[in-house]
Structure formats: C-alpha cells, structure tokens
Length: 61
Image (cartoon, rainbow, N blue to C red):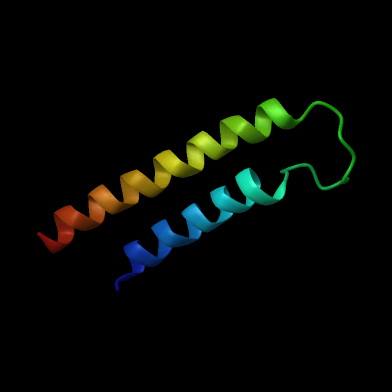
C-alpha cells in the first residue's frame, strides 16, 4: 500500500465518521444548522478519495 492509498483510506475513514457517527466540522458540539455543511464536506471527502485513487492508479499503472 502506497502513500496515496493511505491518504484515500484516511479520507474515507473521516467521511464514514461524519456519516455514521455524527462527526461535525463545528468544534462547539452544539447543533445549529451545520448538517448541510457537513453533508457537503462528506461529498468533498469522498470525491477527494476517488481523485487520489485515480491519481494513484496512474502512478502505479
């Protein structure tokens, strides 16, 4: 496993935590409407993980 694979796995892990365990980007811990932002970050993390995997496939291939 290379560095890019590890980076993609970390991005997926954080996305999973946001999705499954209610992690939020807001450090205060209160619920005040950040769910929409958290959902957008979730999409960005998944997209970044896919991009890293694609880049890694180009390096390995």
